[in-house]
Length: 324
Ligand SMILES: C[S@@+](CC[C@H](N)C(=O)[O-])C[C@H]1O[C@@H](n2cnc3c(N)ncnc32)[C@H](O)[C@@H]1O
Image: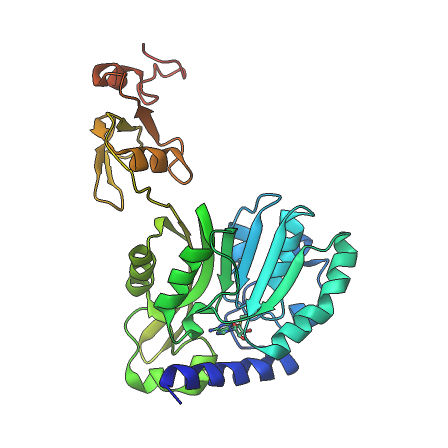
């Protein structure tokens, strides 16, 4: 059996056991407000093995399609089900039958409490997500990526299933330095979401390599220290943007409105506050959307740059009025 397959088999067995008998101290303590969980049965809450609260931070909009990777007993899916409403859709993906069993057994109680049924659980791997291309608004994951033997594949799969401008909000454990072999080979620590942790730099670099942009650290808390290595729980958000084949420069400029003196985007554009910078059609569109929406003024070709520096929103008269 290949190493990646044996890792998966071990993790599956570990979480089969955790589905059958709740393990209290499995991951770092994290909670959701009662109003988000009051519709969820105790069997699910008892098997909450996350390390963060992505659903608190994801700002789910009604009607969104949400996929939760490594959904376990279903807690994050059931929270998302309430937030996205009857017109939304939530898909939980997990490879462990016993976790899926608990989630499916509790689904009817959740839908009867909510008055609608918008959740489904699919059996599958994070490395081959059983969801169609470009069909998802939001991907969440709570303490699962560290367990994957092929993390690059997981990040690539996330990009594949997201719609253009879709986002990920993922919680996971990261380490302050690369994990030495003696910890990496410790199966108990693998199951506890420690041995497979990436460093923060590795995590961010994977996200950037597959094309996520606008990446933001939404939360970071210390979990534990083992052999002088600090392990933290983080929650990150990032966005997908699909570059178009015909991206060209048509004379558009972007003006960064502040508050910083200068910023650099993922592609290396340097934007000094209130200075017009030439941008291609893709960049102009990207800067007009979340998470950059409102930070830039995009000037179309017929607007000259002199007008820009006077009329951009940062050049106000102090009472909110424009100087022009
Ligand atoms: C630490 S638990 C977290 C469960 C859930 N997210 C929560 O917060 O309670 C990890 C879950 O991910 C699943 N899992 C781990 N690796 C996986 C993989 N490669 N593909 C699919 N599911 C996986 C396990 O079966 C388990 O249910």
